[in-house]
Image (cartoon, rainbow, N blue to C red; front, top):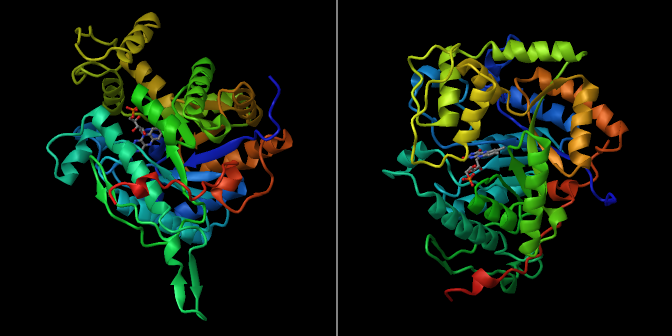
Length: 448
Ligand SMILES: Cc1cc2nc3c(=O)[nH]c(=O)nc-3n(C[C@H](O)[C@H](O)[C@H](O)COP(=O)(O)O)c2cc1C
């Protein structure tokens, strides 16, 4: 297959003060206090911009995720800034980098979300991105007056309507409708204002939105669903897709699958960017890089190790089991076993202890190596259509981010994979995504 000339590597970075590795916050050089320190985030954003990243991304869950205080209280996952507040502030100390955040479709309302991301897009000069997730953490329900979490298919049903309403609200004003013409006394052209009048199964939203069309038309839509319904939703609406594949073959299969689904929905597959996760740990030699990763793994507390295994396998209580012993026999379950069975097989075949299995989960998409090895990994996945780019999660911060920008980015640039200067003004332009025309009026006609 010949390489389309326009195809170019894109990069995003997950920004979390305590780092991507579960024990990253305990590393001697980590800055866990940075989590609630704006100066820390500002420095990190500028570092990523120096590395010509397309976007930084702030994940979000609207709850402290878990009851298991023994293990939870040993991770840095219980506190973080409200993402849009942080991104609005970061827009003032950066010029080019995209600013993306999660806002759940399960426990929000479309009007609020359309308005907030439109505002961020205006404030940042067209750099906003919205990760439109369905909530997967049941504890979020309890923070919004619900006794139970919305069922999976219903969450996606709601998400579908949610995204359509948000897009219709973003299109409330035509691009040129707000003229602010002092001479004629006309602030906006009334024929360029469209009221959605939406009445659906989940939402009734009259509209229009009280802010003019975002500079990007629509802020870039990110998505990360991995279930069958999630993939369909992502293929319909997502423009940057996060995936969790750690193996090149699995990543290639996901890549081909999601591009085919996007094409089946009438979309240009080139306008759906696939970003697997990558957690790079750079060192002068491979041995040193591996030593550094092992050092991080050793910082995982026993309670956290047990919890990692329990959460990944499910239906199992490891409280009284030694972490350096094998997994206990697992009783049969009625629940879906498609995820659990391969994990149990892995533990059995390789005779892994609970701790060793926890280390596998914690390592996730870690690639520890020399700058050349990490650049090779990125290039191989990109050229073999396993990835259009990467969602980079640094194991701890800020050191590994600085190392990546100073040592790996120049190699990617030398190889012609990564830009040396930002060429576009907006996130869409940098990502090579088209600006949606303000023409989708189907929702705006309903209910009139
Ligand atoms: C890189 C990445 C980032 C994610 N960020 C969030 C997040 O910030 N908040 C959230 O609730 N879910 C997040 N998710 C979870 C997914 O978006 C999705 O909600 C979850 O996988 C459930 O959908 P599924 O059942 O279709 O897989 C993330 C997933 C990935 C791979």
